[in-house]
Length: 58
Image (cartoon, rainbow, N blue to C red):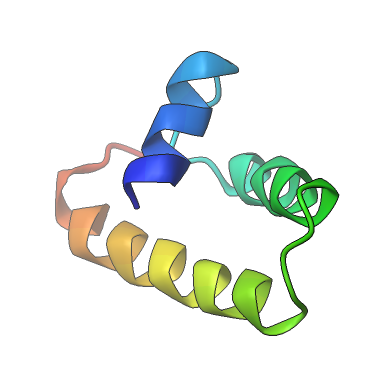
């Protein structure tokens, strides 16, 4: 999560926005991550967003 939050901050994405996950996965893939790792990242980000959902205004 730390790397995801850092990525969002550096590239000015909102961590809670759905559009921030794909560019993060693309960045991981460009750095040679395996196929399993992006799936784990998506799960972790989804879990994080579920934890935040009561605090995020729609």
